[in-house]
Amino acid sequence: MAAESVFLDTSLIVAASVQSHPAYLPSLSFLAQLAESGAAPCMSLQVCREFMVSLTRAPIGGQVHTTGEALAALDDWLVATTLLFEDKGVLRHWERLVETYAVRGKQMHDCHIVATMLGSGVTRIATRNPADFERYAAEGIRISGPTAH
Image 1 (cartoon, rainbow, N blue to C red):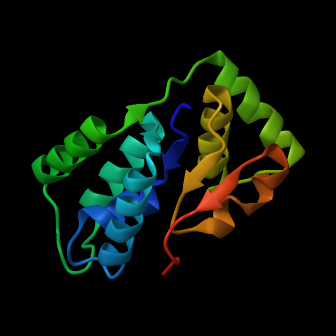
Image 2: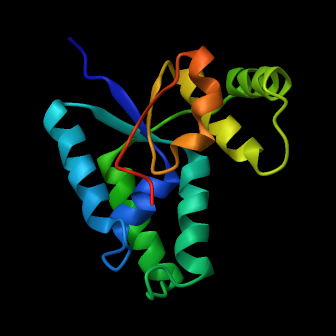
């Protein structure tokens, strides 16, 4: 049986990358549980961009990251995950989701994550922000993760 793919949301990988983040230990523990279960972690180019923005924009847990530090941390995630492909099919999923769920503003980012997941046949997302993805349950999206903080 093939391992279940699990999409890693930015909120989770940021918390697991910064030791001074308040959710660092719960996030690491959750990721360890995923690994033990044999889950296959994946992410998208959008998550890569969001990760870089988060680490370089402002202090997280009192820690400020240089661009070099953020890129090194991103490289670690790229080694540990599969990067999902984004193509015209993902765009079509995204357009349908935007219309179906009346997505607006910053919600477009999470909608695009779901479109990328659907385009690759991934139905489980690991996040610290479950409310951002609950509307997509009718699409078969299942949410997991440590307790959001």
